[in-house]
Amino acid sequence: MRIVFIHPNFPAQFRHLAGYLGRNPENDVRFITADSRPEWEIPGVKKIVYQTLALKDPLTIPVIKQCAANQQQAEAVAGVLIALSRQQFVPDLIVGASGWGATAYVKDVFPKTPFLGYFEWYYHGGSPNVGFAEKQPPVLKERMVLRNRSLSILSDLTACDHGICPTQWQKAQFPEIFHSKLSVCHEGINTAFFKPDHRKKLALPGLDLSGAKELVTYTARGFEPYRGFPGFIQSIPFLLEKRPDAHVVLVGEDRVCYGRELANGQGYKEFMTQKVDLDPARVHFLAPLPYGLYLNVLQASTVHVYLTVPFVLSWSMLEAMACGCLVAASDTPPVREVVQDGANGVLVDFFSPRKIAQKVAACLEYPSFMAPIRQKARQTILDRFDLNRMLKRQMGILAQMISQQPGEPRRFG
Image (tube, rainbow, N blue to C red):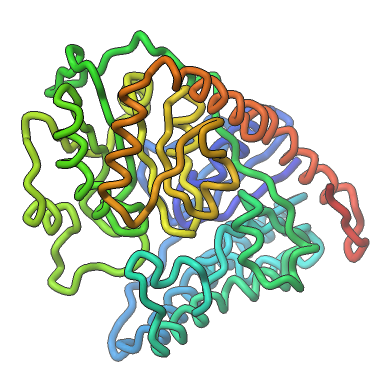
């Protein structure tokens, strides 16, 4: 098969699927991306890097700037696809991530090639994530910006032959008129790698907590309100007062990946640690870790805290559950699709630092009672998100799309 993946970042959500296809020598797999980092490669996958020109003034209006950025992505990717067609390379299938503008002209360059879109989120002023952390609805200007952000997504929804969403919750955010074109299929969690080892103690370069009796962990790409960072920071003093033997480890960067940045340019870590008195001997901030050390953190965790507004569900929560972590997660819709309170995890109040601390402290108080919850957490991932299961499902969708003729109705289970 000839398969083309499109995503400005590499390999992003297509890491496992592209790698699986690349391992078959009968496949010709190309990955069109803006990510030129040479250390990111996948055996059997040819990376094609495109470049866009820098935006220039007077594109100072945010909406116009966003549209211009999307257009640049679209034209750059179209140029790569045109070059492939001139080399007589006609894909059997194109798989592309929507929301960046990069896939806008896929069906114009290759009208007969099936296009499978990856749809993570649909933005609009009524989205449940908007204003959730601040407990205030968006102003009109913000609603207008959000609606415009979905213009490229709407274009892909109409152009694609089919689409996939990672979870039912995320699919539910898209306009109902498109639901028949969307299948729920997660990228998958490598449960052979993310697995329990409760004998593991945390010993990292520069941080040896192998003697810690209780270890509370928190991981996120960015320390930000979307992932409940301010509330968790405020909960830590209450928690450490209740559990004198506990240590807290936070892994991530002081940046905003989603939502609003602070007006003064400050990061939320800097902002919150100025407001909240934390014991540096027991609260440890770590930069993003290589996978092996990140796994060490999860395997050594006594309680893992995951907080999120009603938005995209993070891989980190599922990876923690796969490791048999006792997950204390926010009582919000994306979490409730996976976690049942008291069965395979514990739900906490996103807005109450004291209640977060109380729940985590209770989990630490009764480790034997929590053992079955840990086991059920991993079983949930094995049953619903295991990588091999998800790859089989993804490959079934790909095979069905390739086998059907253009214009033929597509039905997916």
